[in-house]
Amino acid sequence: MQNEQTKAACSSVELALAEAKQRGASAAEAGVGLSSALSVTVRLDEVETIEYHRDQGLSVTVYYGQRKGSASTTDLSDKAVRETVQAASDIARYTAEDTYAGLADKELMAWDFPDLDLDHPWDIDADRAVDLALECERAAREFDKRVTNSEGATVATQRNFRVYGNSHGFIGAYPSTSHSLNCSVIAQMDEAMQRNYWYTRARIAEELDSARSVGIMAAERTVQRLQARRLTTRKAPVIFAAEVAGGLIGHFLGAVRGGAQYRKTTFLLDCIGQQVFPEFVHIEEQPRLVRGLHSAPFDSDGVATFAHDLIRDGVVQSYVLDAYAARRLKLQTTGNAGGLRNLRVSCGDQDLNALLKQMGTGLLVTELMGQGVNRTTGDYSRGASGFWIEGGEIQFPVEEITIAGNLKQMYRELVAIGNDIDYRGNVQIGSVLLGEMTIAGE
Image (cartoon, rainbow, N blue to C red; front, side, top):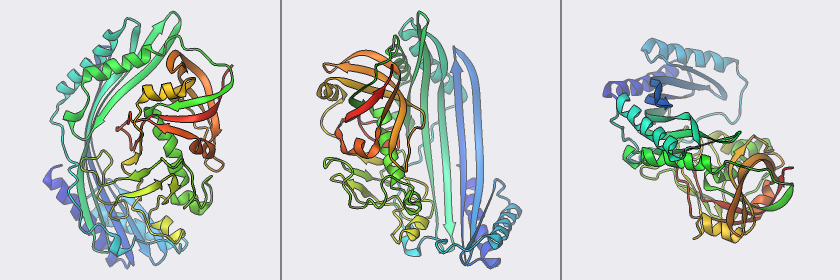
């Protein structure tokens, strides 16, 4: 970001806090986000879109005792900032008192934090981005003659700058970047068609996979799905491939979020100290990884982020809490306002092929569809596709099936986690082998 922009962002936060104090607010917080981005998409050797984005926004929250009001604007002029604070103040006067409302405790602020090396702009223009996207798509289309169509390839780069401040006297700011390349193609055999994709994502452009390798992987994954069959209804072991296994852990994270706990809308209510996973499972958050894709020095409350365990020896150690949820539960915030960052799940010493051998016969899931998860009961039912495995080897692709179970039982019956870790997502995990699930088909 240009120095003028960053200075203006910090000034806007300072002005908002000063204005809130002048208007009699007992406490206030404000945040500014600036972003600039380039995105280029090509399809069938033609440029479809070239998009430049430059966005900015200010959000303000004021407290009058236990009354809270929030407002936002995309205009960072002094006049607009003052008007936004006025709007937040007006709202606060009409809201009911909330005993738990307020800033996080002053001593928890990120008064001193390290440089996490998150800012690595990509010196790329639209022409070069088009060339990379074309190279990626061509590699996919040339991989196999059965690849007959394309949904395109996209190169994207984004740079962000975030400022947060509150009436404790805390103001923190940091820049960050994110770059990606993805490709999606369609393969056809006789009347049957299949679609699949692949992507790469990195904090530093030089760490992206090559355009050619992304295209080839997208095409290979698509062709492998041709001649997919349905299965008869049965029970069998299931492996969630690494690229979808993060969602399995995501349901656990949703169940231990503070909001779900204090509302009592979770299948893991009051679960601190409970054995939820087998003893070999360890899940930890590492929000201050240098160059981490999801790293941040402080959360949306200004609280300093810190590494901590959610699961140790299979036992729940912590909920996922922001300051508000922590007060509701009479606990301490875990620095997770705005979400979790860089969640790592322990793995064994087996790769995916070894897990397939261990499973012997069962289902390898590579794609999930639908939202059939009940977070209150833990009941799980989702559309799936993937491959049927016998003798530890892929036999044929499968589609139009549903896998079902209950998350509590699925977590307890987790057999192994592979070392084929997918580092692109916020949940970094390998393939997961479950003892048994119901597979509904023909």
